[in-house]
Amino acid sequence: MKAWRFYAFGDFRLDDVPVPVLRPGHVLAEPLCVQPSVTEAQLAFGIPTLAYARIKRRLETEAPVQLFGHEFCARIVEVGPGVIGFKPGDRIAARAKLPCGTCPLCISERGFLCRQGPVIGFDLPGCFCEIASLPECALVKVDDRISDSEAACLQSLSDSVASVQTAEIQMGDSVAIFGQGSMGLECLQIARISGAGLIITVDVREESRLISKELGADHALDPRVGDVAAAIRDLTGGNGADIVFECAGGSPKQGLAGTQTVRDAMAAVRSGGKIIGVSWFGEPFELNVDLLRERSLRYLFPDISTQAHLEHTVRLVATGRVQLRPMITHVLPGLESVPRAFEITANKGQYRAINPAQVSLKS
Image (tube, rainbow, N blue to C red):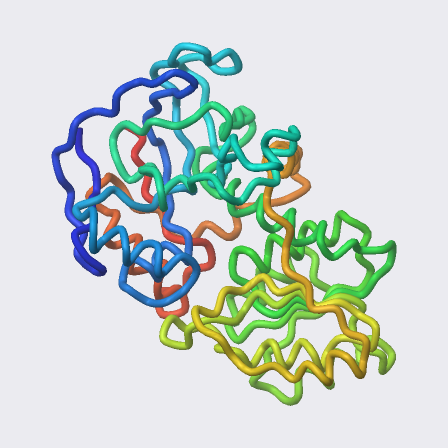
């Protein structure tokens, strides 16, 4: 079969490789639609971010190696011994992080919280290929009301569900969201159906602000026009937002906001409020902890996305409570389009992309 393999950062090739062996507890599936996550797109070109050291080590010791492709929709073609919840023909998405099976969490029946197991696309081959081997424990069935393109977004959306759950929104809480890429727009919609009151979004891109308003934001601010933190305080009676989601930070080389949005979030949240750190920065940065302490601010990071989050995500999209279609801006045909998808996703601002660029493999 054909599969994309990495020889080094920035060097990936469409190779002929053996079809995976069907193992117990696994399925073989044909990817229908797959997209690189923003993290994967950065790593593909050697930009430091989450898991950079792990991928660098694999490239140095194992190349060529199949990497990435954990955000996908696929159709099962064969099930292995012991698989009881799925059958050939089922469309599936998957949770990326798998339980290790041996840690204290796993042996106490809390494996859904395990962080020590392998990750699809990082430690195990993902779906930038014609046939993928996937463990049953990671899978969820895709509702017929969800398209292949929407289903490829479910894994990312489940992370946004976990982010909003971490915020513990109370009925009527004011919410500000810095960054209206795919995760920012997802957090917006989930916060709205989770009881948020006033919702204020922030993004430099006009197209993102327009989609933000369409999906339920009360105000969509351009941070290039005036002091955005002051504007948020004005819109919340001088207090600041109860909860701020920071979804814009990261490498400026890829059009992200660096670390400035963290400081803006601290200035925009009310005293005693919460900042939910969704972004990955790729390197350490200085933070005024005394200011956090003085104002009793809580800087929280999202809980791990579990199988339950993924299952709930399917329900949210199937019932129309969360819309993904407005965010899907680039769909490319055929497995040979994968490099282009990485390029667009790594430079979304340049290409006016909201969601990562998708590759449609449906024959």
